[in-house]
Length: 98
Image 1 (cartoon, rainbow, N blue to C red):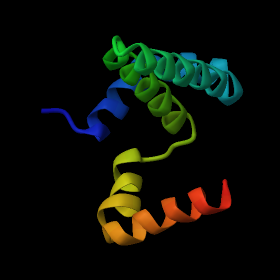
Image 2: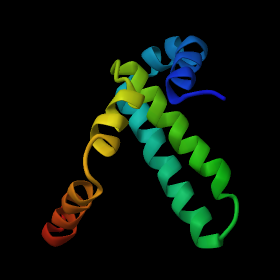
Image 3: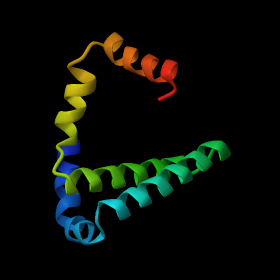
Image 4: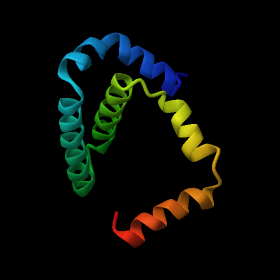
């Protein structure tokens, strides 16, 4: 079984040079397009598996470009904190409209 760290390393080797040449703004634009496609597929009720993969691919590409270890960041933000603490930050966003 592959870890997120494994996927990051594989994607870095396969797509790192392309991502560097494309730049973060282009990758962000593609991510936003993929999020829109995900929203549409969820609305339709089909095809969202591939769209989720596309969104994750773009997130990994941006993380690699910015040298972010997603596995460690996810652990720090969502595993090492209590669920109530995580939910509180979501409640704050909902309450403030941010």
